[in-house]
Image 1 (tube, helix red, strand yellow):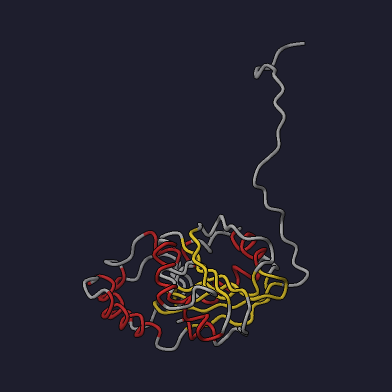
Image 2 (tube, one colour; image 1 turned 90 degrees about the vertical axis):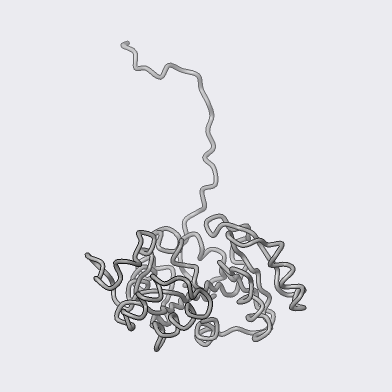
Length: 236
């Protein structure tokens, strides 16, 4: 998946890259080794201390930096990154209508944001298909198709979309991965076997921040001045 996404990105040595939702930081290590970029390996669910050890064991601690942070509360300065990538993570938070407004400020104007991960080949607009019902849970409504993601980003007028597509044989690769990594997850394996790429697969989206994009100011607190007075309306 990392190879597929980076094939659509222009990564060059010494670029600053945010690997958002990096998991165990293996993608971050890959990005540095393959392209010579500096990577901020950022995740909420996985320990930055453990990732730091993994990064040191890989011998890349001078260029890959583990960070523990929530995607909605990132500790970086505006326009710090040249590129932002997110592998099999973005759907957990990026469906929020306002999220791109938050994230785009951390990439320089003209910089790219690229995401890839599990998604849909076509939208499920009403009833869950019969062959997916035993596996489908409400949290899976975050999965969407490439056209859905394109519309989701385009309407903000923040990004110029360069690519929005699906991986050939993505469903089969997803199934192969599960059989290797989580063979006990019978419900998901059976869903993928039955689906055969009709609905399930991998989705990719790459956009570039417009140089004239207007991003709303971040509101971190609202200054107030307390004036003591009655909360009840009184007659004159």
